[in-house]
Image (cartoon, rainbow, N blue to C red):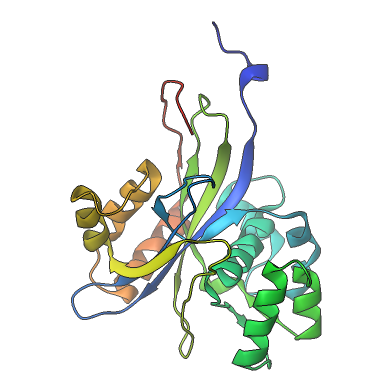
Length: 243
C-alpha cells in the first residue's frame, strides 16, 4: 500500500529536559522510567511530555526569552515559546524541579505539584497564586526528533538541557512514573548494553552525544553552541511496527 498524507498520524508537539548535575568523573543525568502502558513504555527516558493548551496562556509569567527569539531558535512560525513553557512544566510535574523564581517554600511547591498531578490545580493557577516567573533562559535547546511516519503514536520533540538548580532535588512522581535514577551518559548506555534497562533510539543517540563532555559547564557550552548554530531535525525512517 502506498502511504499518503492521510495515512500519517500527526506528530504531537512535546518537550524533553535533560537535567544535569556535576559529579566526580562525569556529569550525571536524571532519567525516568515510564509505565509499560505509556508511550515509550518501560524505557528509561528524560523527563518531558506533550505541549498543553495552557502553556500558551502563561507567556506573561516567562522571563529570559521572548516569543520572537523562541520561534527563531526552534525554526517555527509561532508557538515556539510554548515548547519552553511545556519543558519547565513537565520537569516540575515529573521531578519536582522548578526552573523559576518564586517566593513559595519548598513545602508549598511540593503540595502544589501534587495538586497539579492530581488535576485539582491548574498550571496557570499555580503560577499566578505563587508569583512564579519561569526562567526560560535556564533551558538550552540542542536537539529535535520527529517520530517516523510509520508509527501510529508520533511526536515532534524538542530536547533541552538544564542544570539542577542549587538547593533543589529531583524525585519522580510515582503516579506517573515507575522509577528514576541519576546516571552518567556512559553509565546509562552500559546498563542498556547489559540488558538492565531499556532505551529507545532518540535517547541512545542523545546519550552518545552527551557522553563526550566531562562537566556541566562543557555540556552547557556545547548545547548553547548548537542552539545558536541552528538545530537540525532528525526523523528516522523505519518500517511499520509496534509503538
